[in-house]
Image 1 (cartoon, rainbow, N blue to C red):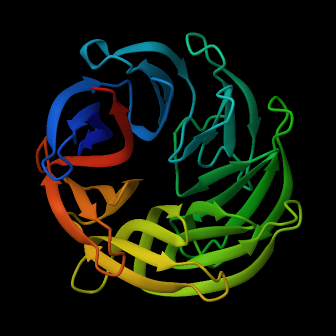
Image 2: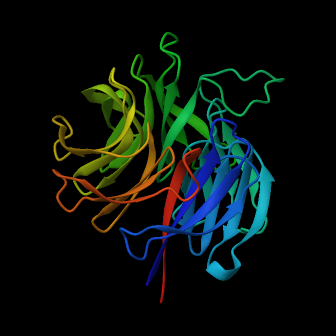
Length: 336
């Protein structure tokens, strides 16, 4: 079996070079670049299914055929405002994208050679007609789809507007998504959302918020774990553990971290393990077996998590140099 990490990268500070980097991870602790491909704009989230990689970009959406590493190619492309999170429907017919200040976007991908935008729903932010910028200080950051509902959190990079909300969208009709519930989470600014059973975990600046979503149209805020000087950019759940990629921005300076929390009891979340990663901020992660692959400023880290109380970095890779930022990651296993 050959294992490949597909990693998005952009150069910093100019932001003029955007690529996919294909990393050989067959030996999990000896990572090396196989090849790179230019993309139309900044790829901020990835999703993989059945030999295809879906790329949500700041101004574009592309689908690549990656079934054969010797002939990876883009098979379709459309213009739209993408965001930092994306999820595919279980049947593979739709891609649900966060679109930051524009809310969410639903793309019909049942024919990957001809995707099309079929639905949009706004968040609590007014986008002016002449506003053609992809982002801004506020918008929908994280999304998880469960059945007919999409659960989302918004993040605000200003600390005095208090616009942060938890939104539930009804997506039963993908062409007409609508807000089914919205509750304020201010002043807590969430960046990522994960779900386990009847509970949603929203994590971001200095805290993890817990919501009971057993009644999707009437979510209830039930708990908050305070995390001083911590930022969670993205998170994922495996069993009773929540893994968070983010940063420690203590006075001595920002540093990337992988943090692990026990969520067995949603009312009593416990931090059980943490390890620094190279770079100022860890942006995203992917779990496979007893490993967490973490992408950060300039570095991809292979972290052994067999003992979640003592995670340890076992391998590092910075294939494109110190001026690159790695934003998103997907893992593909190929048959030998």
